[in-house]
Image 1 (cartoon, rainbow, N blue to C red):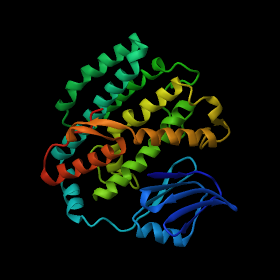
Image 2: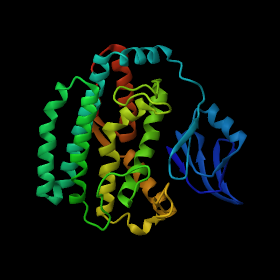
Image 3: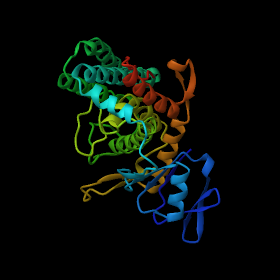
Image 4: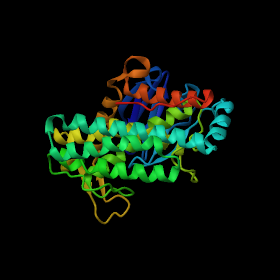
Length: 332
C-alpha cells in the first residue's frame, strides 16, 4: 500500500506496529506497518525521530515532496548492495550501440502504448481526426528500428509526442481542454493534471529502480545531467500514456474532476494553476486505484496489478543489462 499524506500541519508518529498521523489532537490516519510499502509526504508534514527509525528498520520507502508533488528526497535505508549491476549498467550504457538499443526499446514501447491508449479512448468517440492521427503514429512504428543516433531518436520521439498530444482535444468533451503541453509551470488545468500525475508515477518508478539496484541517475534515453534521474525517467516513459494520460481523459469525460477542483492564481509564476486540496485527494485516489487495477501482462501470461508490472519491467531492464539480452518494454 502506498500512503499519500497531504494534510498540511499534520504529524507522523509510531505506536507499536501502527503508523499514526495526527493534526493537533485529532487522529486523521492509522496504517499498519505490515501493509505499508511506501509513504509519500507532500508539503509541510512533520515526522518524529522514532517514526523515522521505525520506517528505516522496516524498509518502508519514505518520499518527501513539495506540496505540488515535486520530488525533494527520501529516506534511504541502505544503498543497494548490487554494485555489480550498477557497474554493468554504466559500462553497457556507455557504449553507443547498447545505449541506442535500450533507448529504441523505450521509445518503441511508448509509441505502442500511445497508439493503444488513443485507440481505447477513441472506441466510443469514433473521431475521424483521432483515426487520422492514429494512422500517422502507426506509420511511424517502422522508422524506430532504423535509427542509430540518439539525437535523431530524441527528435523523432518529440515528433511522435506532438502528434499524439494533438489527439487529446478531440477526445475530451468538457470545458477543460489540453491545448498544448506546458510544464514548469503547467499553464492550464489539463497540464496541471498531467504534471502532477507524472510526478506520482515518477515516485513509483524511482522506488522500483532503487529496489532492483539500478543507478537512478544513469540512463540510456535521457542524457546525464546533474540531479536528473535519467534511468527513472527512461523507465517511466512507457507508462505515461497507460497510467496518467488515459486516466486524465477518462475522468474529465466522466466529470469526476472539474474546474471547481482547481485553484487559479495567475500572479503565482511558479504555480499559476494547481489542484485544490479536495481535487488533489480525489485525483490521488484515482491514480492509486489505477495502480491497483489488473492488466494483462504478456511476459507472465497472466493479469497483474499495474504497480507490480511497473516493478517487474524494472527487473527485466536490469536482467537485460546483466545478460546482455534484449529489453522489451511493456505493451498496454
